[in-house]
Image (cartoon, rainbow over all chains, first blue to last red; front, top):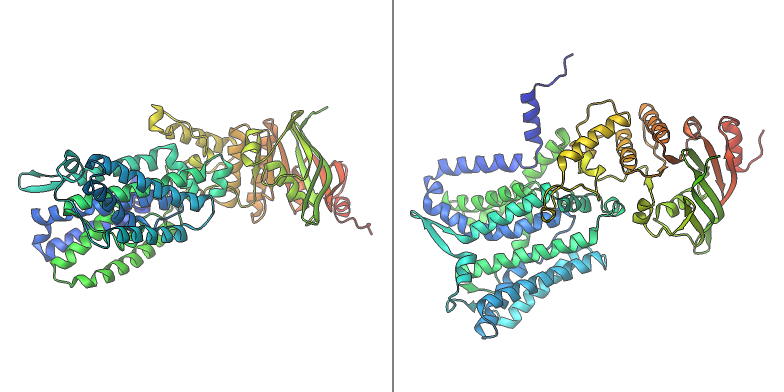
Length: 333
Length: 250
């Protein structure tokens, strides 16, 4: 029996084995289906709308991807998303600091929240689920208490930094937000980090087999702590971006984002248990869920049915990925 | 006469009221394979854990090449050239062979700020090492550990120890759960390692495996050394079994 495989066949097998294959296929299918069902889906206005909100959740998802690859996750990202802009705009509105300085202070506080998460998880050895659940409630509580539940005003501010973070500009009639380029930039940096750098190897090892990684000299606790800080930073930056875009810093904003973001990351092909993560897959996962939310509204499905689609998609993707992983294992290059 | 690579003197370890090791003297010479045998609870694992840095001794001294050393953790042990390979191979199954081989010591290329791994070099070296250690199957270095057999995983662990010039490779039950062919493969890797100038400690419940490959046998019973310098060529499996159990022969 001849068991030699043709080069083309090997290439197809390798392609199918990549964690990005499924989300990529599903994104292509979704675009096709929605484009056929409603021509408005591919209109300039709709794409522009889609790209306005996508980077904000996308930035949180990027941070969550690297953190989950290291075997941890962060439920406090939604609260940090809501709290950080509240802090920034409160500092500015109360005249404590100019907007640029307020932004830096708010980001530093967010990084500090990430550090506390990391410290509790790595030093006190408390599962990240419990630590970040506690932090989620604490941070949300602080945001609500300090504002009495009212949004902070943002419309009096005028600063170059607002344009830099979330300014709009036009290519013809096509409106784009600066946040899209920040999202692409963060994705490129983290994609490089995960696939090409030594740190990326350590992140995967920390999630795959922390005992072995430690034995090889990998500083697992330090790596994880840095990743908690990075995740918090990205959630904070996304929150600030959102507050500038919608001209309000609402202490309730970001509620429920943590689970939506985890869904995006997992659908993209990152393993929930750690050890394997893909930035490209997450970008596809983010696009997929945002397109699904946008598309089902456009074709007339009630928005309340959105969760049914997401739930079924997660279950289907997990089943397919498990099947493909067993049939076509792939390497990490 | 061969010199001692590692010498452990008066090693004692207690877990509360339980004494696991009671003044054990144990040594490994340059360029030899030592079989460490003993019944369950004899103290083999504890002795090896002390050597590999996962447990610290209550009392005793360790010398490497005649120098007294402190082994507080696994990193200390690896730095001293002592690599331990467990039955459940200490590899990251999600990572490729090459990434596992270089984990913690990844070579970098380009400006330091980019922290970029030299993946080309890693893959080339890994491929060469696999051939050197005797893996004849054409396995790309980018293959994830999860798709390798148990024997191949042990081979990767041994290759890693060889590449980073570990002077002493400790194999703790490396043939458990392996088939006949894979076990023979691991034995071959061990002989190759010794022939290329390394020393090895081989711990196994299967005394037949030990007899096939070791130069010398040391037997522990109830935390004490009851036989050392047992030459497998000058004795029988039954005789060694009697030493292990402490029971008189027929």
